[in-house]
Image: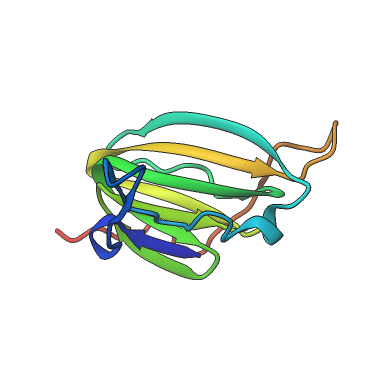
Length: 136
């Protein structure tokens, strides 16, 4: 899993210095890993407070960019607190879920997939100790 914070990414001036870009994943950085894939979707989603997305995996690279709220993201055995400006990369076939804290969590998500026609869009899994315990 990659957990990237916008604040940790230095800007790069582009287009005759008319725009400062923060490349959270550099141009071409995932070319080899995504060769032969297709854009599966781009969406925005909201997980209500104290709820979580069903833990699952699929044959795609999936990215969540946190727009608002806070949550806990689990990708495989890695667990991170997430907040606005965070980008989380989930590699293909790695189980993952996100739990929304008291504010809920809203994300922009997109995925590039390797799935063949007729292949399931996702496979549910079970995580022990999920959702995470919240402080009182």
